[in-house]
Length: 522
Image (cartoon, rainbow, N blue to C red; front, side, top):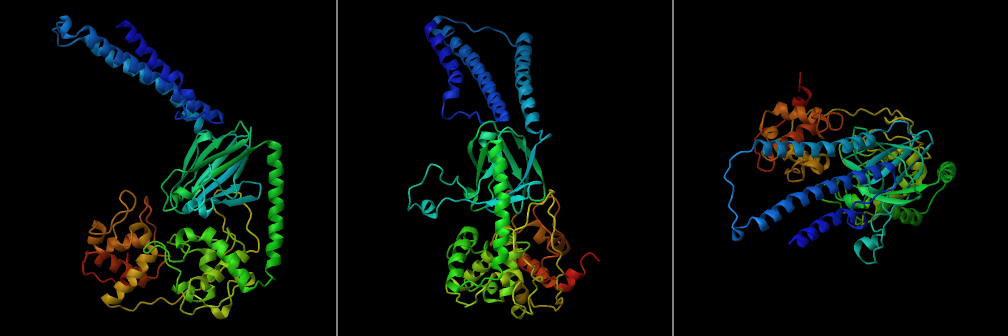
């Protein structure tokens, strides 16, 4: 029996001793912090194994040597002060022993001071934007796994879904500080080999740091559920020597200069329709298809279809404006910093002529740079006057806050204040809701539990109209609900509030007019 007990003890202690060679154990990483995290993990594992050996050892010993068949008689006692003190003090001391190294490691992880290089990391559905402070180098990093591998028509590689077109390049032996933020929803930049995992929240800046010890390629991914293409947002870091990094910076600056010259030259070039369609398809599949789908059909209630849509059939200037500047209040982001004028011209041409749209419109880089032909502008459009797109992509901003480079005077359209019937309000409200609200609250108003509240029978919708207007107009601080006063007209605001209060069985009967919106809070 003693041999059995000894064998069990050896088995328990063998687990932590061999853990370093186990494929499912935590990896050691390539940074000092990742080493500390690994050591902390192993210390806690040893403690847990020791506790397991002691507890189960006593249990097994008691069951064997104090069993009824050996004539054991249970002791007759109720309380023991010594036992009570022991099982209170011992766990407390164990917790203190675990907390001390854990606290030291956490403090070290949160200390980005004395960094030699600062990089701004911006999450954007579904790609990463890297900006090297004071180096005039910035770029977007997108998934480069071929579509054939994703659809299963080709054999998947070992780095399937963990490869990008432009990796983040970092020097070894330098402390690198990361500033994490987001353009849209919550992302999380995670590289296990660095022991760095930090959320990128819109409107906030989070800090992290690393100091890499070994040259190599290290992979990670977004670790926050950020949308339908969450699994297609990898992180790839190339760690190089300090000399190679300096050379890489010089090469990137030269590439930027070359791109600037090429972009300026492209403004005087005229591409054929076939050339624009070929390039436009390539840009669309790489930048737009994730939301609007490869066939342009979109996702009903989330991302609008581009087949015969008003933006496609409308003015070229309005189409260019949305691609260049995005559409506030929706998931449509601005591509002014992501694409050149030629690429934007190509993708606009492609969208206006693909999938049976066949508008015949041919857009050139010069049209994009001038915001579209004035004669194309729609007099009924409530879009802002298009911004002049620079021929080259802008350089890195030296500050965390986004610096607005161009000030655009927006044409203020006439505000329509006419009262509408309930049917007119519901029709307009549904259109506004699907384009501006459904991405969060869903087309059926059911929301996403734990993230975005349902509007079906909610206290907000069933409560006073004034409270509902307040939230839609001014937003709700501390939540993802933004104010729409600068995005929607009073009539659109009135329509969408009316729609929300009467759709999906809410049936409050409230009909809100533009005058109610303008008079809100007065």
